[in-house]
Image 1 (cartoon, rainbow, N blue to C red):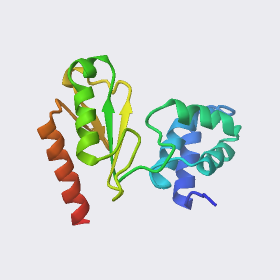
Image 2 (image 1 turned 45 degrees about the vertical axis):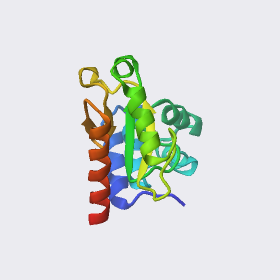
Image 3 (image 1 turned 90 degrees about the horizontal axis):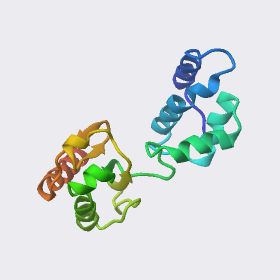
Image 4 (image 1 turned 45 degrees about the horizontal axis):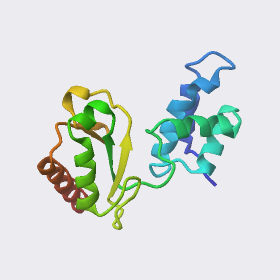
Length: 165
């Protein structure tokens, strides 16, 4: 059974307390972020049901939010999640070619994870950095003005970090 640690439960209570009584649904996105972080980088149906219980919501209310936003993963992802922007400005600047390059380089499709569990490729809507296109988000950091050479560097960096751990 999915359950937050006491420390995480206290954090949930702190998040809920930010909002007026009876408006705990407002805490949904930050609590989903907390759940995704705590339970392996993705939200299973069981995890979303647990969040619904904590916030006194219907499970469908949680599913609607989790499936709408690309920042939530609904299946397991690799250690390194490449979230490549695919909206207009990035596409005009070559994001389609970058996506194809990553697919070929890692031998995976969009939404897939490498066999070693290191990399997942995901396409996302605008990340708000159009002037730096093509770009992707890697964890909490943006990687900008992508080229095949820069993608190779990023993959090498990630592999080196994984081998160091």
